[in-house]
Image (cartoon, rainbow, N blue to C red):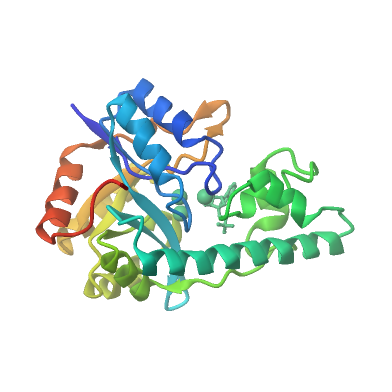
Length: 278
Ligand code: AMP
Ligand code: ZN
Ligand code: FE
Ligand code: FE
């Protein structure tokens, strides 16, 4: 049986593994295919493609966009993106700037709590264009783990939380399509996005992430039924950001390869962009 992991982060956003380390884990676990889905970034795709190629793993380009529809936050996964697509790159660059400005605002709020922290040290830790909340606070040393930092400071309505400007989900679907990609709703069980699924389907949503580390079996079954009902492709991935409790998260979700074949058939039938960045 062949398996894939289609939701992975590297240090090009808020993951801790380099593309080479991530591909190494994928090889050790016997994955046939992997997609890289860094937040608002395709920068790691070229290195990930090379590392997967060397490890005999099929690589699929991707990115994860933070969007909203009717005040509901939804994460969109784009797959088989043309990583040179000018409009896509220009658009994600805007959201990288939003992320960087947000870090400065969060640091200012943390400073108001009389906790010394400098934005520059967060940027130095992040060392990428798509810094995120996981990079804040852990750096300051006041919280031992990102989990603790989220619970005390960074979650919605906690003292250091700053709302993030998001793209419209309908525009996000179109942005992914014009870059030759397939648009997939990420971890619907975490964002409570059920009500907005029909609107996204009307906008051309291609798939839904039924399998995710934080989905219960019941959730996965619920979204498999939704996929059936709305004629959506099925995806899945670990959403690995690195180690958790001493173990890498990659390996917790093994998507049967037949779903990758269905994704490829759809992208092929559209005559969409290349599967690999060259
Ligand atoms: P941001 O992109 O800055 O809004 O941060 C969101 C990211 O923070 C997610 O993609 C996860 O990597 C991480 N995250 C979200 N919630 C938690 C949590 N409770 N504990 C640890 N990390 C989290
Ligand atoms: Zn993340
Ligand atoms: Fe997400
Ligand atoms: Fe993710």
